[in-house]
Image 1 (cartoon, one colour):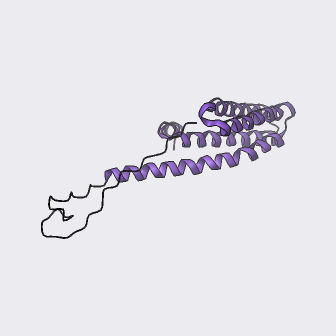
Image 2 (cartoon, rainbow, N blue to C red; image 1 turned 120 degrees about the vertical axis):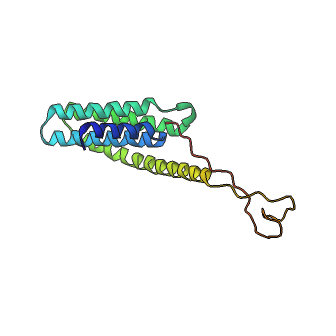
Length: 172
């Protein structure tokens, strides 16, 4: 696949992602950048380490800045503390060329990434279910005689129509 097609595909994924999927993708990118920083430290690639670590810091700052402190309550406050701790530790990556600081941040972020992955899969599954439910033909209405069948003289039972299930709305 050429570079332009890969970029277009990635852009499409971002443009169509649910809020939970977007947060998951931010965690994935952050973890990827941290691994790049660790690899650069191992190769003594100072510029590569600096670039990857800086990118990871920007992603964490974005995650922190998008927290809804009013609606998020204690969870948002705890996430903010985690992000701030991670940002402080990532300063050590550059200051001391310290791969262990990046590894610590990876250890803190992986469970959060995994949780958002589960939430994104669940919300996408519920959305698919709602869409499929909305596309199914509606059962025939009972006739005036109340026999439960659209045809007089038959005793076919029809199920009560169920309202479609709604998707989950998540703000990050």
